[in-house]
Every structure is written in structure tokens, then in C-alpha cells.
Amino acid sequence: EINRKLQAKMVDYDLLKRENEALKSQFESSESYSQSLVAAKVIGFLGEHNHPTGFVITAGESSHIQKGMSVIFGKYLVGKISQVSQKYSVVMTPLNPEFSVLVKLPQTGANGIIIGSNDFMVMNQVVITDTLEKDGIVVTKGEIKENGIGVFPDIIVGKIASISKNETSPFQSAEVVPLIDYSRITDLFIIASL
Image (tube, rainbow, N blue to C red; front, side):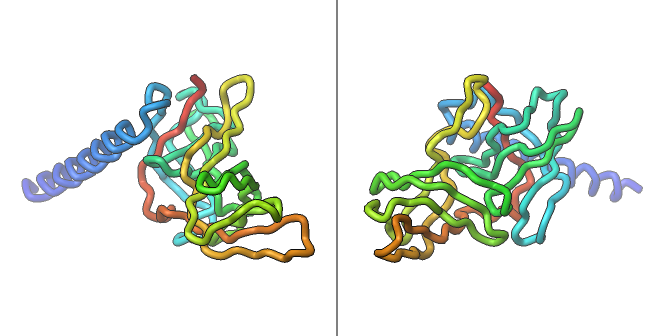
């Protein structure tokens, strides 16, 4: 009986330790909006386990969460809030085919739109005269609405794995892969309106 109680306390300790480490690293990496972060735990996922297209999280209307808010882990975009209930929300990840966000490639100034494709993302609508670079880091351009809700600028989305370019087309595209493993995320942060 004593051993079982000690084992349960060790599990609780390990969970608290991991949560504290996540909070510490989050607040160190997001200084510009750290005052408006709401922490949440992942309690379910949508899609394939190794490439989730969505998460169910432990924050909802009671935590002032609203549809369209950015969800991050460190400096990385985890997704956007797509559904909200009183105590829970659904996060749509960038791998979801219904996901889209304005992005840029800071190294070259190229702009485009990220669209999910289940196990990777596609950067579309990039003007053919813009320069895309393999392994270039793609970040959000920013889509904040007048109510302060939306996707903040300069959050890392992923890196360019390959480029598709046809000189006769006015646009080019690129395959973008995430730099974090969505399937391993247990704690994340919602950027609430400022």
C-alpha cells in the first residue's frame, strides 16, 4: 500500500516537473506576449497519432479562450483555436487540410499562404519572382483582427523541404515540414487577446 502511494506521488511529481519546465521555457521564449498566455494540456487528438490535425485541450470559454486565437509551444505555431466550449477547446494544427495562415520567408521577403496537407504543409500563392530557399524557415506574417484575436507575426511554422516552380505560372509553391513533433506535445499555450 505504501509503495503504491509513493509511486502515485512520483508520477504526480514527474508531471509537475514537466509542466514547470514547459512553463519556464515558454515564458523565456515569448517575451512580447507572455503576459497574455493561457496554459493548457492536450487531452485528445484528431487525425493520425503521429500527424495530428487537431487537439482537444483543457481551456475553454471559462479561461476566456475564443475561436481564432493562436496556439504556440515555445516559438513554434501549434495551430489556431477552431472550436470552443465552456471548459475545452479544439486546436486545428497546420497539418489540417482546413488550416490556412499568411506566412513569410524572412530571409528573402517571400510571402505566401500555408495550407495543411495531413503530414506536411504547402506554402502556396508565392509570386514567381519571389525567392524561396530550401531549408528556409517559414514564419507567420500576422493576422490580428481589430479585437486583438488572430495569429501573431513571426511565429515559426516550419522549414521548406522542396520547391515547385514552373516559369510559365505566375505562382510557385513549396512543401513545408514542421520543426516540432506535434504528436509529442502535452502542454501548450494560447495567446489570449491583449
